[in-house]
Image (cartoon, rainbow, N blue to C red):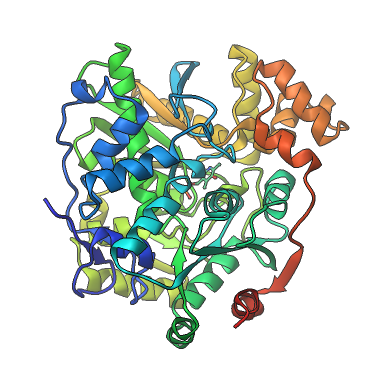
Length: 495
Ligand SMILES: *Cc1c(COP(=O)(O)O)cnc(C)c1O
């Protein structure tokens, strides 16, 4: 059955999946949401015998209903191939009574690869389907991981260009090195003076600039977004929750229909929203445990019903979660407002004007599936340390936030259901923080030595992605002010 996509901010005529993917954001500034959440149409038992690619098809076909079977299968094949260092794509590792769903086996060793290795193919296919002849300019703000994963996905893809803005002093050294060494004649990487929210706000402003869009059109360009607001990123993220459940089923770790809890280290609210959609599709998930670092806006929101971004921005050891405006939360707000765009728009305007909003009692009641908590910097480091001590398994700082919050959840509730913790980055991406947490005696080693030491401790080989950047030349060194982002894009396009 066909699924169309509505904007969260107005009741305009809905668009097809391919149009939503091309546009990224709706013209009214809203996010695209499926008009209803489709139910899985295969049993969990049937799905349990499938490969990652096959499960991906079974899930994505329900959302991208204007793609033909061939088109979608072709996109999936091109995405989940040897770029991943394991055939299972998203393996589960059991440690200390929980299952870590390792989403970092792709080209840039963070979970953004799960969606960004397929998004370029979905986008090119969408362009063809809609007879788009313009070059597509991907504009992205990144807190570190999206940028590199998007660059890797779009580099040298015909018919596209990509511009990535990152907070100059807000990403890890490895994240920065990964981005500024990016090859590809259609790539452009820019550091901005500001934090991630500044970068994201700047990008949103460029997207909302109608005059610029019209001018671009005359020059044969149009913008799109690779940020997690794009439905073409959200949908592929639903897949691995379904996949992890059916693999637990296949291995006899859960019985068909038995509920599990899912724990997600959260920033922009994309990953956990995908888990929420998976639940709505019929996947037996009980609680969605939302883990924040010291930028704990979401924890405060879940406990108080007020979203308030008026606070200091904290730079933490889990930079991909250093976010005060969680864009994808808007999709949840729209839903608990009863799919009421007007109500949602009021709240989003309030957020824009005052930096905060409160939801009604009635809306709060619909958040019972969610549990929010956070981990301090100290607790995060302690979690890495203790897990390594007890089991020898090494997790990165983001995953550690989730692991710590999961412990708090169990203590608070006594709920011992099987749990899947989304493991969002390889420890090699945040080697220094991870090694310092294990033992501060490693502090004077250089990054290269640290990686080797981590390999020795964990028994996991240093990933290609890390070896690669050690010798790679810096190809991007552009830095600009927040106010210069639009001009920077125009300069890059030569218009
Ligand atoms: C992006 C990212 C997150 C946060 O995911 P959201 O979908 O933005 O909530 C967590 N961990 C890592 C390593 C990331 O790259």
